[in-house]
Image (tube, rainbow, N blue to C red; front, side):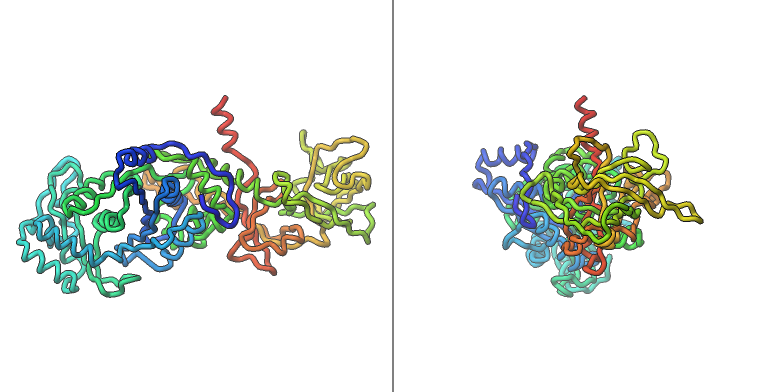
Length: 571
């Protein structure tokens, strides 16, 4: 894999799969003179999501593995839904994942003239005709899985008439929907995609690259295979929903007698507790259920990036789930496991208090401020140590104190001694409460000066270790706790009249405004990721954080549910 952001985690072991087996067999037969070329062909009608990452990693990864090439091609054949914003975001996402298309950036619109010529060739071969049925009539004539279709009454137009009408369609003489160009195949085919499918439609819409030059646009099935052929793609790897379209892919290429890539289908990535449909994701954005495509709760790559996911973790995840021929749903916990595994090795440890409770250390000198040493990452000694200020007044987490502690509560309580991380042992001696509400407002403690650094010379042990920040030196911060966007494991399955938006988790975002963090975090760059001791991994928000307003997004908790699942499976 290529480098990303200057760091690359350990390479995952490449697992054998049926696509690699096909390529190995083709190479053994010297097909395409041993040449391997793949492509990643997104439609620029939305932002990429984690499912697209699997295709990106697979196509670019196969090209790298076999010393081949991978093109980035935008299948931009529907200008009514496509925008330059999506083109730019897709290029950014592919680069972020660590892949490079070199000088092989293409667009289906590059081939509009050639595709039009190919369509004319089919007309002249009497393999395509201009049909004047409307969309509803075409659907009705198509038939069902149990009943054959009915041939269009316009199917037997002469070649001359079809050429004339198709040219006039191109010149913009007809309204949208007045005519379409259809392939002439077999209306009784058991495969509905072969029942005289539409190849071109009239669309009076300006294209983001060709402007108003075209008033007709090719259908995806027509443009896709021919674009593969024009570029010399050897292995056209796509998701399983295109398996039934492969006979049409083959028919078009064979009828035109052009270079014929091999289409191979694999199961798309489905994750629980989310949706992967561009249409559904767009509904979330336009309906205001999320703040945008880059909302950290979204499965979009821009959302995952803003939340603090790393490209290395996503690439490792895509390799671990493997490539299969049957659809399945992957547990979100595996993605989080891959992320924790990566962040554990690369993320500096810092201290932050999300729900602060003030602690006054009565026997600590008021005028003294110590600079204590703290390890940045116990997993990587090369990351060194940092200095953190310690003073008489500190903040701890409110939940780390109980006035009347339950059994097995080992944190702070009256008369109990605990360790402050990298600092001292302290003992609670007094509790201050609000006279009106009874809420605890302050704790008074004493410290043992002989336990500097968090250990005792006399060998006594304490069971509780708390994180903390100095009250006089800490920085204010806003922390956003993100959870899964949906409460239902498979929200995309809409049954009994329920809509997927009904299962949006009302607690998917909790905003904490009064958090306190180490002063060193004031210099943290947007996108920087840290492990808040005992709390989880957090990322400096790349969009709303600034020097004057620190905003952190929770990337993932420290709890590792996937390792528990794995251990149960091994038992």
